[in-house]
Image 1 (spheres, helix red, strand yellow):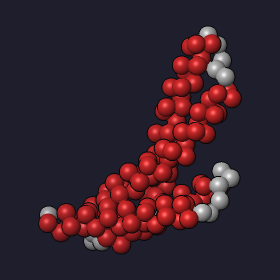
Image 2: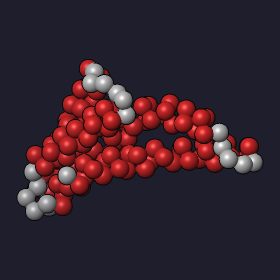
Image 3: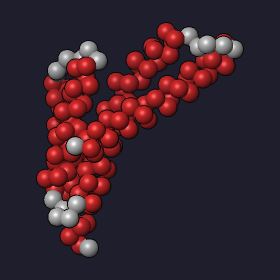
Image 4: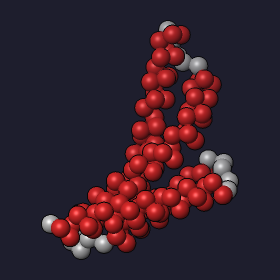
Length: 129
């Protein structure tokens, strides 16, 4: 559960970095407060493009980490990380006004698969040790 929450939290934190840099550049240009509408527009443009990729990178990495840290390494633990990360991703999509589409369902299934893959690799590496 914690790793799935970490996928979403770290994705948001990484997403904030370019938005903060953009706001800082706007503030320097304006020599004062940045244009909030421009910052919001930039964040709204960047978030849908970057967030799924961050989730796809972090889900297998954290699933791998979870499986490697457990006593009995099992790929199903990675699958559960992917499942919960996918459900949280759908929840975030719905919370920000999105709808359930075929694309969002495919993204959910990709996260589940990537979680399983991270767990599977972690299990294979643990069995060699």
